[in-house]
Image (cartoon, rainbow, N blue to C red):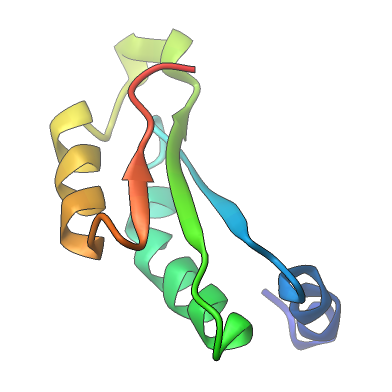
Length: 90
């Protein structure tokens, strides 16, 4: 993200009680950045703690899938259930 947008991004975190960590199942790079986004969000909401919902979108493009459901579930567990919940179906 470019530096100019950072100040705008910070304001989105203010007074948050929850958030979505959305990645594209057809784009492994987006999945690999989820932990970065989580850490950034946690930094801006300090001293508060908010809960995130991990969402993989573009599930209709299963033939192009680069991230498995199991990988997403593992990432959610690795981040800690107190921080991130995995959404199986929306």
